Length: 119
Image (cartoon, rainbow, N blue to C red; front, side, top):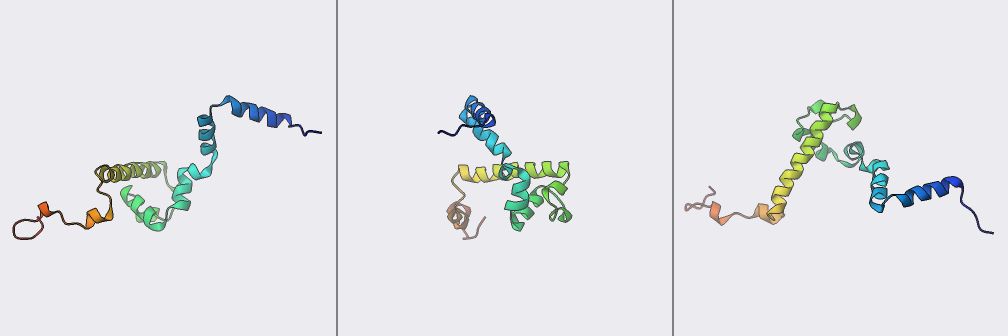
């Protein structure tokens, strides 16, 4: 004898079929705490990364030890703006293929003046 699904299983399955695949994936991501700013800030970032982020967001030293939910709305928005700024800076280097460590260690021959010093 075949096992039958309960009505709740059938209705959930029907609802899932009604949504396009992309929307189902987005819905799953929204329900997953790993895709929330508080999880990244509190659980993923190490101390150095949080310090850099808080410095860029212009938060004080007392804010470094706070969890994401202990920060004010203004401070959280400052963190969001700092992340966008950091991304913009990173992309500026990446877009001109200047992000590799070797690019930072090379001296640009055009930057050396006739006396052999960096200008």
